[in-house]
Image 1 (spheres, each protein chain N blue to C red):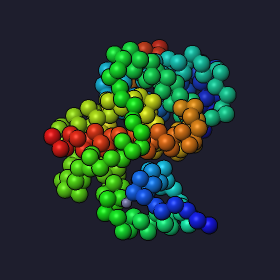
Image 2 (cartoon, rainbow over the protein chains, first blue to last red):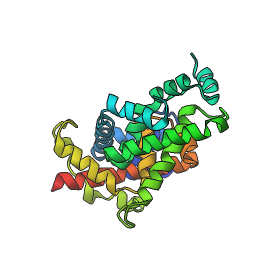
Image 3 (cartoon, rainbow over the protein chains, first blue to last red):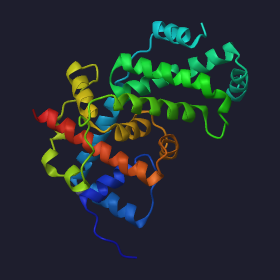
Image 4 (cartoon, protein in one colour):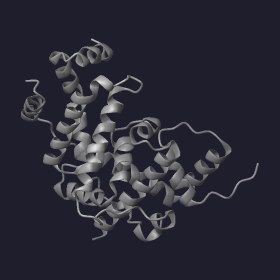
Length: 77
Length: 186
Ligand SMILES: [Zn+2]
């Protein structure tokens, strides 16, 4: 089996599509090997993790007042 | 009581059951709407409209998908309607991959001090950056990465194929990274 050399762009797309997914193929092993040796790709992965964490943590409070207003709007109070 | 039972009772108009369902999903749907529209009042309105739609159409809910999937689908429609009210041309579709992954946006992330989202400056950056992203991409990023739904579930909610979800996701992430990098470089 032959495949094209792995580029940073391939790695980035791959990390993005398969974060949290179990991966085990020749292609994936080549990608893991690339990441281990590529500062740029590791930094990309780190930056995306930061961004996802920030957007997850940035969550508005949901108050009792909002809950009551909702039930009233729905005629369920 | 199982959700199935609750739904069956809610379909008959049982207020107690309806209240239970509302209580179960209100926070999630409010948070989701906020993460799409980045405005508390609009998010509250979208959440209310989503539950009004639920009351109207619950009888037609066939149980082929999870209730949460069905509610997300309704909420996505309300979010898109809200986005369409905004001026045309304010949203950006991520460019092609070569542009998205260009080195010119590579801020040195290893030197970015650990920031907490309690920091108002960071909150503003996050709001400004995602506000530029076309809603169709924002929705995929939020469902998949922020709400942590599976790719398949995200596809079911948005009506996209699994490969289309993956493609929008990596482009949305790259777009956000570039926008946030530009802000950090200021
Ligand atoms: Zn690389």
